[in-house]
Length: 104
Image 1: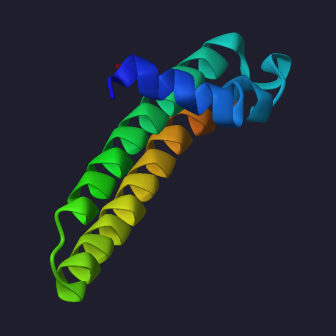
Image 2: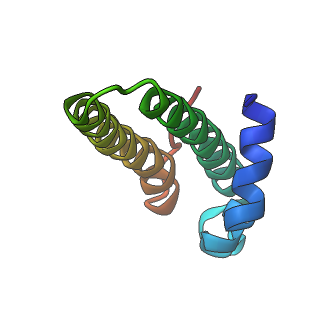
């Protein structure tokens, strides 16, 4: 699955990221746009990793193999979501407090 297809699948499943964001007048259109790009990129990456995990499950020949795949997926998922939250805070917090925000 390509990143574009993953992003589209994420948008179909969850809607636009802007549906979950504060009004643009509160924080600013730039922060909204940057956060939306970041979230859509994250969803696309997670969908690809999840698809890879399902492929890995298909290669398992024992229950131990399956548990190893599941543990790896859970650890990676938690790490990815934590990193994503850090990125989103870096985008939102400075904009909300009147700072310049993160630059790419």
